[in-house]
Amino acid sequence: MIVRAEDLPLHTGEDVVRVRQATRQATVDAGFSLVDQTKVVTAASELARNTVIYGGGGDVTVELLRDGGRSGVRLTFADKGPGIADVQQALRDGFTSGGGLGLGLGGARRLMSELHISSRVGEGTTIVAVRWKQ
Amino acid sequence: MDRIPILRMGRFLLVTIQVDMHDRLALALQDDLMEQIRAKKARGVLLDISALDVVDSFIGRMIGNIAGMARVLDAETVVTGMRPAVAITLVELGLSLPGVRTALDIERGMALLQRSPDSRDRPR
Image 1 (cartoon, helix red, strand yellow):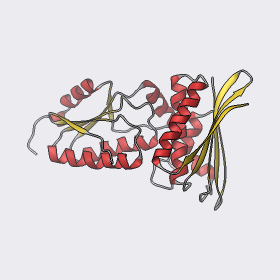
Image 2 (cartoon, rainbow over the protein chains, first blue to last red):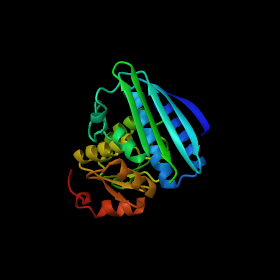
Image 3 (cartoon, rainbow over the protein chains, first blue to last red):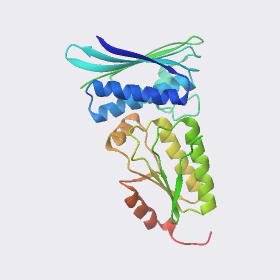
Image 4 (cartoon, rainbow over the protein chains, first blue to last red):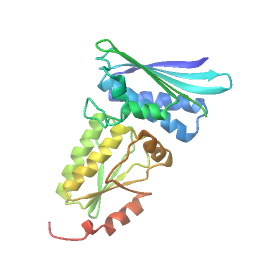
């Protein structure tokens, strides 16, 4: 069940900051521990930057979820950028197509409970990341 | 555009990062620090991140860049005040900061820099 959903644009560095803040609020409302809040906000920051830098800009939906007794936060990043040709390669640590550290996607996957990537070259990318309260 | 202030403490420079940094600010900081290390003939840089509740790979790369560039200019970098939640997350993120020393706070960071053999007086 979606308790709350918020759509935010992702085109600038300032947008990334706002997404971090919205994600932080969602994790607080979901009752996450401080460490888990930090992990989710860090993952959000990685994915948000990717959307701006590699995706050519897009948007994110930050959702507070409740599934039976447990609460969670779901982040859906979407862009209409170049897309990811090889998702497995993109998930590998150290792989970067832009001079970064290459930790963003793999790192986000490690920090979240679930990470789903769907991408079509030339059409865009959608990334759904979920973290459930332990 | 705002710039992060760089304070001088003897032979060291102190930078306290207190805001959510965006790309332009991070790049400006790197440029300013390099210029200040050169101009003030600084021996070390204290990068205080105690106000940061999140350090992602972008900030991690900035820290690594600062440490690397400072080294080229013969200055040591010590990162101080990393929060436990941030440290735990960085490990899981897979972000190791090779060659970057850390200290609990600015005071200990200063002590670390002062003990370093590179910070002993010698002609430049």
